[in-house]
Image 1 (cartoon, one colour):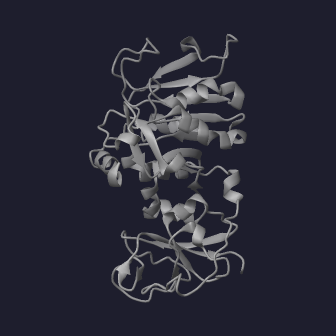
Image 2 (cartoon, helix red, strand yellow):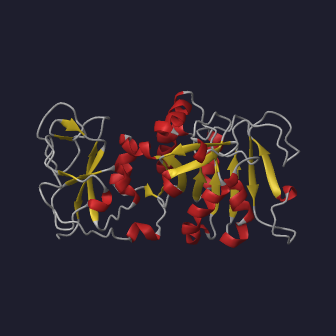
Image 3 (tube, one colour):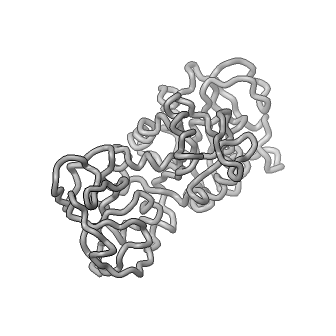
Amino acid sequence: MAKNSQLHNAKNAKKDEFYTQLSDIENELKHYKKHFKGKTVLCNCDDPRVSNFFHYFAYNFEHLGLKRLTTTCYKNQERDLFSQNDSERAIWLEYFGDRNGNRVPDPEEIGIHYFEGDGDFRSAECIELLKQADIVVTNPPFSLFREYVAQLVEYEKKFVIVGHQNAITYKEIFKLIKENQIWLGCGFKGGAAHFFSKYQDVAVAGDHKEGMIRVSGVVWFTNLDLPKRHEEIVLYKKYSEEDYPHYDNYDAIEVKKTELIPEDFNGVMGVPITFLNKYNPEQFEILGMESSAGYDPEIVGVPRLKDGDARPAINGKTTYARIFIRRRKEA
């Protein structure tokens, strides 16, 4: 999909109905299994007719050792799976595990409750369910990502959620990343994913999947620890002024790709935001970020050499968004 146009169009139109594939959920959540035992999981942006998050946790309830599964739905109707709900009312569901021994979440084992309101995650009713949860796992609305994450942080919840890598450049989100309050999960294969969606797909033929839409740059955001967060990036390149030019307007050098970080340089480096896919906070320190969004005055130890455009520039030409980093230990 060229330049994420489909995602941007959906965001501008407040079209947020993107449903995640079960295979993508399984591939990510297998890395967090130890965190779920004895926990209450909330999927608070999910329609159980099409939500593979609800499917995953319901069918793996005993395997994960869950205590309770809750999902909330925003004004949905005509649920084929739960025939009791035949009116346009928001509902929330709860599941406490298998009761009849077939290890399958049967409809009669799932409690169905009606909201007084519309089931918006910001409503008092949904916040009450959020308070009762230990871990939140879902694909929240792209257009409300800042607000959604802020709520999770406010109520001190653990989470694994889908977002777009552009959210990294939001000052509210980057502040949390810089302070090691949230980080990226293992990710989608190739940095792109196919979602079930009613919107038109503009993917090229090779990427097209019937009934689905391709979105590039999607990532998982989490505050649950996982093994990859402690893996050090293997460095092999040597520093030279020719290969690593100095920025015109920042006291730092340009590193075009994460794998090209020099092993023998101890100063400040500007790296792409994709660096966060391999970021180990024990190996590197994040100092700040600069992008077209503007200059960040809170960057520590990276003097700005010139006023004007905040984006890092080399020989008068600006770069893409850059995260400023410095190694924790001297080479």
